Every structure is written in structure tokens, then in C-alpha cells.
Image (tube, rainbow, N blue to C red; front, top):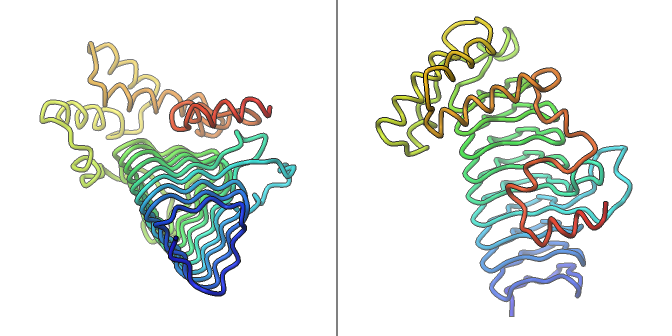
Length: 293
């Protein structure tokens, strides 16, 4: 039997692995599935069509799978999918997806969400991302692998945070942030946020070989050391010859951002299943979603 403390309200239709630990005063709805080794502290609420993997820790007061704060949401059977070994802090809120935004909010594995974070509908957060306390993600945001968003930062809907990038504390994010860079405001809101050098810890965490890292650093320097036109700099990089996979990924990210309205590539995927669904979602869930459209 699962280790379930007294004074909980758990639907008999919920699927809870016998090795879960459910603390006092938790509420778990009928559409919920929770995997082996996951621990819910006290006063955690899990509702909606929420699927949680193995060995997660969800701290006191968090609410997972609540309805989106989006007036276009029509009460559909939308999903929240959470992977393995995540640490979700106190009073975190994560909403399910919306029908017009792709039906799913997705969190990968080995992610840390600090206390009082909010992850709105239709967001995708990839493996190894770190969100500090009180980070607020609006809807339809992508946080790529290994990215770091520091405390009290707000991210505009449809923005992307690139792989292993770092966004500093209290920084308003209104457009896509490229991979491997530092992006922040000096004196918090007193000046304009911008790219301010490379995220050295992110480059180290990516585990690149010496040659790949050297090529990536050259590309980052070429793209961001001055304010000349990004399109021209991308064309110049491409003319140098074959690019390493990491440099090609960086260039693709920047080209896509140029295509997006207000520098947000995902704006063009309003009212449809976004491309990240193909990348991250299990095939059976993707088939289910397409069957409901």
C-alpha cells in the first residue's frame, strides 16, 4: 500500500503507485496518475488530467493541474505532464494546457522550481532547467534544456529561453533569449535588460568537447559582441562552411526569433499544436490530443 497520511481526500479513480508518499491534507483528483517514489508534502493539491513520473518531490501548498487563467479555455480534457526527479517548491502553481494552445503543459525531468513559481498553460520546460523563487511564466513559453531563470523574473507569453542560458533576477523577458548567454537588467528595473556576456556555467554544464566549445564561443562572439544586423551576421557565419551541431542550433534559434512577431518565434503557433509537442510528448498522448482537435 502507498504511504498515505490521514486527513487526505484522494479520489478512488486516481492511479497512485504503492511506493508514493502522500502527506497530510493533500487532495488528489480522479484524473491524476502519480509514479513510483514521488513524495507529496502536506496540503498539496493535484487535479485535472495530471500525470506525474517517478521520484519527484512536491512541497507544501503546491497546486498542480489547475484550470488555466485563460479566457479561451473551454473546460476541455487538457493535460499536465511532469517527468522524473523534479523538485517543486512550496506554493508552486502549474496549470494544465488549453485546447487552442496544444492541450498540454509539459515539464521534463531533473528540474527545480523554486518556492512560489507559477507555470501557466501550454508551457514546455525541458530537462535540467532551474527556476528561482517567484519566477512567473505566462502561457506558451518554452524553457530549453539547462536554462536558468533567477528569482522574481517574469516571462512574456510565447517567449523562449534558449539552452543553458541564464536570465538574471527581477528581469522582464519580452522576447526570445538565445542559448548560452547571460541576460539581465542592471539595477533591476532601472535599465533595459540585454545580453551581457556568456553564461560560463551553462557552457560548462553542456559538456561540449574542446573543439565544439571553441567553435561555439567564436559563434557567440560573432553574433553578440556588437549590435550590427543579426541576419547579416548569421549569413556570414553560414558562409564560413559546415557548422558544428551546437553552432547550427544557435543559428537556427536566432533565425527563428527573427521570424517571430516581437522577437518571439512561438507567436506564429497560436491556436495550433506547437512544434515542441513532437519533440517532447509521448506518441500515445500526441495521438490522443490530435484525436480531440
